Image (cartoon, rainbow, N blue to C red; front, side, top):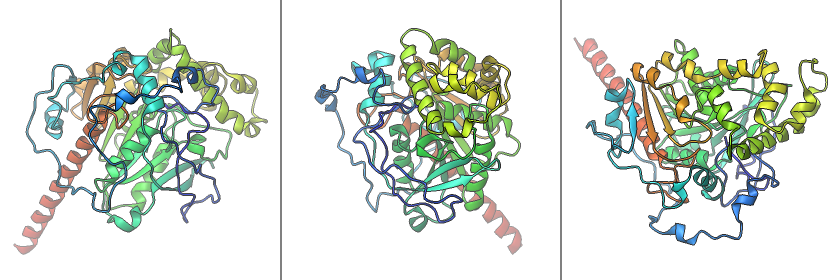
Length: 459
C-alpha cells in the first residue's frame, strides 16, 4: 500500500519489451526526488498533504548519515559468495523472532543480535513514522522497461524489468519478483530501494504491477483483489519459463504480501518459487478492517479510497454494462475502502458480502500450508497491519516460516538503521541477507549434486 501525489511518479525508460502482447502502453516518464511509501496513489488533494508541512526542511534529519550513492557503478555487483557465515546468533531482546524455521534460517542474519533503534522523534509515533517515510524517503532512480502480459481472461498486468539486465547478467542469475501494496507500483520508494539492493548483488529484478497500478493498462472490467491469484500464477509461470535455469524468489509488501502468502499456501504443491519474504502483511483482513476504521486510521482509509476511485474512474467506461449486482455509482464515489470493496471487489470475485471477501482472502488461513522458505517481517505498532492479526501459532508450527516483529516501524516505515532517516528502511538488509542465504544454499546443493553425478559417471 502506497500514497503519492499525482506529480510524484517514476522514472521509467519509455521502451517496451518486444515480446509484449500489448505495445505502445505509456509509462510515466518523470521522477520524484522523494516518493511516498504506504498506501496507494492519491491526488494532490489528499488529506495527508496537509500533514506534509511543505515548508519544513528536515535538515537535522541528515545527521548521523553514512555517505552512500544510490547509483551503482559498473563494478558494484556483489558475488553470490558474499553471504553470512552459518553461525547461529541470538536475536536481540528488542525483536520478537519466532517460527518453526528459526533453526534453519537464523544463520542467514549477521545483524539480528543488534537492538532495533528507531530514529529519534520520527520513530516515536507510528503515524508520524508512516507518514514521514511516505513523504520524505528518497526514491532511487533506475531505468526500467515494461512488458505487458495478457492474462487468460484478457486482463493485463505490467512487468517492469531493469534495463540492461539481459546484457549484463547470465541466464542463471536469481530472479526476484516484487509485489507492491494496494494501488502501488514501480514508482514506490520502498520498491525502488529493494530493487536497487537486489540488482547490485547480481539479481535480476522485475516489478509486478497489478491491473491498473503503476499506470498499467486495464483491458477488462476487472481489477485485482486480495483473493485473486490468477495473475500471480501467470506471472510466476511466465518468469520461470523465460529463465528456466534461474531460481526465482518473491517479496511482497502489505496487500502484495497477503497475495504472496495466499499463493504460497494455496499453491504449495506446485509453487516453483525458491523462497519469499512478506512485509507489513495485514494477514487477517477482518481484524485489519476493524482497525482501519478507528481514530487516525480514517485518514489512511480515505486516502486509499481516493486512490482506488481514481483508478476506477479512469477506466469507468469498461463497467457501463455490468450486471445490477455491481454498484458502479458507489464505487465511483466510495469514501472508504470497505465501501469500494462492497460496491465492486466482492462482486467481481464472487463473494456475497464484504466480510466474506475479507475472511476468505486472509493469508492467515493459508500460511500453515506454505512449503518453501518464508520470512515475515512486521512492526508491532503497524496501524494498517495489526499486531493482533499475525498468525503466530501457525508460524511457530511451520518449519518453513520465520517471523521477525520490530517494536516500532509503523506501516512500511521502519525509519531505523544505517539508512535512516531518508534512505532505505531497516528491513532491506535483512531481506537481502535471507534471500542471498537461500540462493547460496541452493548453489551448494546444486554443486554437491553435480559432484555426485560426476563421481558416479567416473565409477
